[in-house]
Image 1 (tube, rainbow, N blue to C red):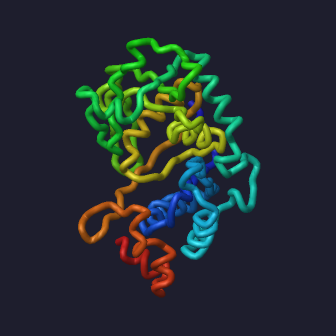
Image 2: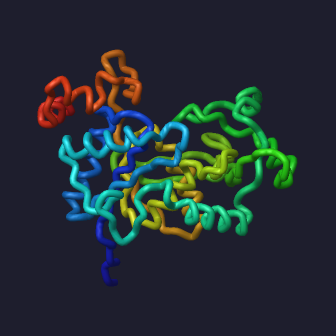
Length: 281
């Protein structure tokens, strides 16, 4: 039997310019870059700027400045181009709409008029373990709601209730989540006519030929969701490597509101990337 050919390693870092990058971002991105180097691969920088209300030009500028200061070197990205761009998500809407149509034509999604408040009010809506996302109680799925013409709605992916989604994580090992129990029908297109994270992430990682996704452990359940999208779209899923999250002195995971631990703030304090990396051990 001949050994199966492995495609060239392609990793990515995908910051969202909704605030200043912090030390937790840097550590996860650094792990991604180190894995690219170890595999003699290519690092792609993608600007995940879909959130129109929160993504701001000053955060985009700060993102490039912070990443370069910390020592990141990407081979494809918004500033240098590449064969599989554009690398700003805001420039890829036609591509996302085509993916949405493929899901619609395959019967994988349905319109949902429920608000987040409606879902949270449901006694059947426990929270998923990864991101406190309420598990959708299936209201519009069960009612078979038609596509509304007079009000905003989202598109939800219909998960195969009871199916166990399993994958081998490069860091945390074997993982499995039960559809309908650990996570429910999830949004792939938002009521404000923007693709949701799950759809955009899968579509872009596949189109940019990413072979391994490195990201935080809080997205483990999202990986199970995304594997269902890969299957529905007849795409080959990448490998996954989830990193533990960095926390502050109180044990609370870092967020963009932690200005003191932002890369910009640390740089202004005179800290160096080498010093900061030495504290990760």
